[in-house]
Each structure stands twice: as C-alpha cells, then as structure tokens.
Length: 264
Ligand SMILES: NC(=O)c1ccc[n+]([C@@H]2O[C@H](COP(=O)([O-])OP(=O)(O)OC[C@H]3O[C@@H](n4cnc5c(N)ncnc54)[C@H](OP(=O)(O)O)[C@@H]3O)[C@@H](O)[C@H]2O)c1
Image: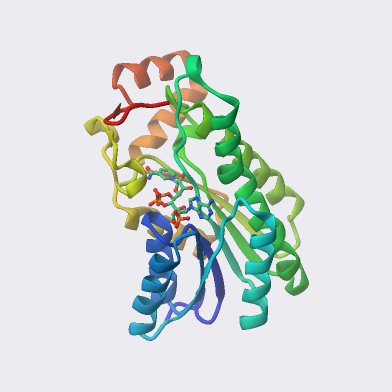
C-alpha cells in the first residue's frame, strides 16, 4: 500500500468514464477510499463493484456537477460516510467545440456550466472539510488547449482557462494552509470524449492511464503543474517564446484534428 493514498478519502468527479475512471482505479488500488461522482448511475455502480472486487472501498453517488445543490449533497454524503475529504480530483468535463463564426451564447454557457462552474462547485464544497483538518489536495484536470489554444475550441478553452486561473489563484491563497493545488494539462487522450475526433500522429492520443499516472505523481510530489505528454512541453515553450510561431505550428500540423461529426 502507498502511504500517500492508504485510507485517504478521495473524491473523483467524472468517474464514470475515461480518465476519471482510471484515476479512481489507480487511487483505490493504492488503498484510498474513493467517492465517485458523475451522472451515469449504472457506470458508477459498475466501477464501485470492480473496486470492491479487489478489496477496495468505493462510494458511488450520481451527481450532476453543474448543479451546486447536488454537489453540496454529494459532499455531505461523503463526510457522513467517511468523515473527511483528503483528495479532490476535479475531472468532470465536456469537449464543447464550435467555429467562432457560428458560436452561440448557449454553447459558451453549456461549457462554462460543466467545465468551469462544475469544478468550482466541487472545490467550494470540499474546502471547508480540508480547512477543518488543515490538510488536503485539490487536483484539477485542465487541458493542454489552455496553454496552446487550438482552432474550433473557443467554448472549451474559455471555460477550462477560467477554471485553471481559479485554481492558480487558489494555490496562492491556500499557501501555508496545508492544502495543495495541482493542475494537470494533458494533450490528446484516448477516451470516449474524443471518439469523433481524428488527430495527427504528432498529437496521437495517449492512454488515460498516462494521465492517471501523472495524477498519482501530483499526489506524491504536490507539484503545481504537469504538462503531458513530453512533446506538449515543446509546444508550450514555443507558445511562450513566440505565439505567432506556435500558431503556425498548430495550423501546419493540423493539431485541431478532424471531426467526423458536424460541429454546431
Ligand atoms: N480526452 C482528452 O483528450 C482530454 C484531454 C485533456 C483534458 N481532458 C479532460 O479530462 C476530463 C475527463 O475527460 P475524458 O477524456 O475522460 O472524457 P469522458 O470519458 O467523456 O469522461 C467525462 C466524464 O465527465 C463526466 N461528466 C460530464 N458532464 C458532467 C456533469 N454535468 N456532471 C457530472 N459529471 C459529468 C462524465 O460522466 P457522465 O456523463 O456520467 O455524467 C464522464 O465521467 C475532462 O475534464 C476533459 O476536459 C480530456
């Protein structure tokens, strides 16, 4: 068992699928008690059963993170059940894309609701329990698109940038409190979220286990920022040095990919 995880209570949002599911399994295998949130009850129950089969402890609670009342209720359930929250992984999200010319207020609001406010609701609900114990860690699953924005991603990037900015400020305000904040910036990941997106070889989709491994490293080290995979760091530095050159590279390599469904 891993001392960073053993008997810790970890809340993972978006645990019904992809990256969140993988993080929940990794945490539970290391001895954490995992509270699983998402809207799909059956998928959460299936994951809970899988975790219990190998001797882990899980609590599945269908929760829509865009609804602050449901989120508060979920955290109260976790506190009632296990009495504490040590780790929060803010992972629930949706890839809402639209060309700027046809962007609607609705698509922006939908993206903000899940990718920004959904995360903020969870952070605000978890903080009092962490403050009370003077310890904890909040890990936000952002996206590399925030560091080097890609064409067609305006609704998604706007909301994820807001959440990353919120989390960066939070880390400063929590300095010295015993509560750490880490942000993970993954490139393309092979999950249902990208089922309809073909990507160029240079930004090939990594397995969700790579992101879960980075989250495990974040818990062990407390480091503030993880950018993955390795080549994403090159684009990150290029963007800092010359946004014009980074834009050129993004367009040249068609990093926005090819949608197999029509965008709204
Ligand atoms: N895939 C990528 O290439 C990639 C890259 C960088 C960052 N990310 C980020 O990684 C996170 C996980 O994405 P993924 O790739 O694992 O996608 P995914 O397989 O589609 O999983 C998304 C998860 O979010 C949950 N979710 C969506 N809306 C929700 C809501 N309103 N309330 C509660 N849960 C909600 C979904 O569960 P329900 O539908 O059951 O509610 C699901 O569990 C997202 O924040 C995404 O932006 C993904």
